Image 1 (cartoon, rainbow, N blue to C red):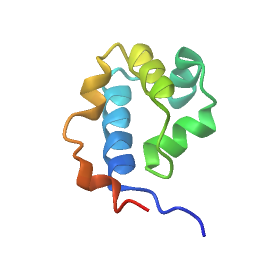
Image 2 (image 1 turned 45 degrees about the vertical axis):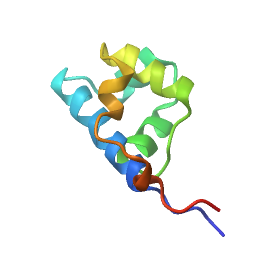
Image 3 (image 1 turned 120 degrees about the vertical axis):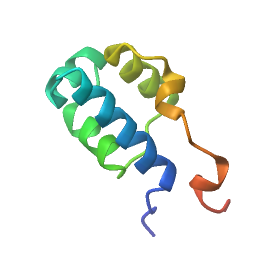
Length: 83
């Protein structure tokens, strides 16, 4: 059964998009700066996938923000039920 993206993934993705657009940065520029494939960046921004901690830090560094800014507002209930 495919995993359903969590509310956390959508929330973090929207924060990445907001930070990127505030810098007038394209997805491709963020991909180069973070060393993450642009298709993965698009998946993260759309909330279709939740990135690893390493990817979160790379994205934050490329956006010149603290990783905590991308996590602001995330709470444990956003991840759904434990399996």
